[in-house]
Image 1: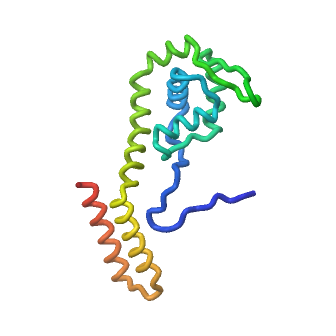
Image 2: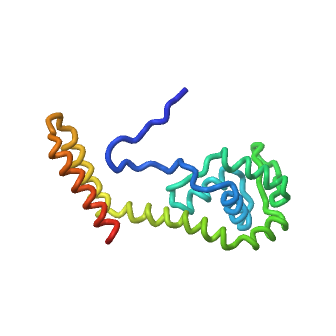
Image 3: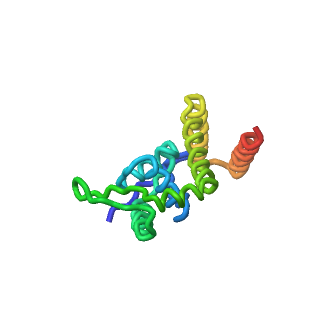
Length: 169
């Protein structure tokens, strides 16, 4: 069994794996995507990932059971196509349900779009440089085996102060 490689270091970036969406929100996003075009499961995953600019990708174990449930509910139909992939389509019942759920859909797409803003701002060269400098300084200082308790407390204070300034900016 392969272990997932963990990112080490201060401010390590990794794609979000935690469950950002509940099942109902996932179904709304799926319907929204299928309302614009038919798609198979992998394409739905990628479309959701694009909404967050790569910050969140739902797992297949979240998407495929919901597609099956939505077929049973009559909101989605599927046709087996090339390579045995199921291409999913929104039904009239799915369109009617989606039309009634615009407010919750807007909330969930708003959360994904805020992740996209995060990705965009974090990707600015000035932000990357500042994070890199902080990471290097912190890692260099914390790697010192002889670091005193007083120095550790000073580092903690500086980080807490920086966090407060960022929050209030």
